[in-house]
Length: 324
Image (cartoon, rainbow, N blue to C red; front, side):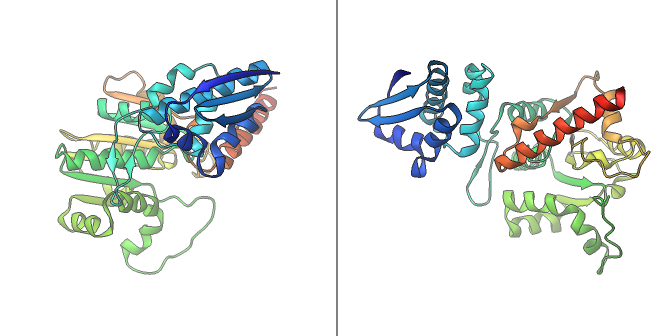
C-alpha cells in the first residue's frame, strides 16, 4: 500500500472534481481499486503503487480541465482514464478547445475526444471530409454544428443534408402521406440535429427561404451545389455510383462532409459500399481528408462503447476463422 497527496487550491475545484454524489471520484476508485479522501485542501489517494500513480494522473488531468473551465461528466472522466491507461495523459490538454457552436438552448457544442477534435479540424481545413466510425461518435452532430457555424458566419449560403433512403434490415412497406412524409423517417436524425442547433421556428424559417434543405440522396442528381455546406449521412449505404454522383455535385465555395459506419452496411448482399470505395480511391487527393473514429470516441452511454468493442472482437475472431 502506498499514498499520494494532491493539493487543491480552491473548494470549488474539489466540488467539481467529486461531482454530484461523488460520482466522478467513485469512477476513479472503481477503476483503480484505490481510496480517495479529501481533507481540507489535500486529496489523499491510497492503494497499490501503480494504481495510485494512475489515479493521481487522472485526478491531475481532471483538475487541469476544471481550471480551464471545462465541466466534468462521466464521459470525459472515463476518457481521461483511457488516455492515462494508454500513457497519453500529456494529450489531455488538447481536449480543451474552442466552442464550435451554441445550440438554441444556449448549450456550447465542443469536441469531447481527440478523434472529434481531429474531425472538426479536418472539416475546417478541407473541402471534402470523410468521417468514418461507429455509432455515437458524434459524426453527424458535429458536422451539423460546423455547418451552422459556417452559415452564421456567412461563409456559405445554404446547408444541404442528405442520406440514402435505405431500410435498416426491415421492410417498412408503403408509407402514408405526400412525398415529404414518405422520406421524413429516413431523414429524422438530420432534423433532430438541426432542431437542436437552431430551434424549430428558426429552422422552419430557413427552410422556407431555401437556406436549409434536407432531402434524400436521389434528389442530388443533376445539380451543382455552389456556396453550400453539404452533409451526406449514412454514406455506407450508398453504392459506388451514388457516391460518385454525390461527390461530383461539388460547386464553388462549397464544403462536403461524408459520414458513415462501414460496420453497419444495409445494402443488399453483393453490392459494394460507395463509402469504402471512396475512402480507398480518394485517400491521396489534396483537399480531401478521412478521419477514422474508434470506440474510444463514443460519447453516448458507456454501454454503447462496450457493445461496439464486443462486436468488434467477435468480428475479428470471425475474420481470422474465415482466413483459415
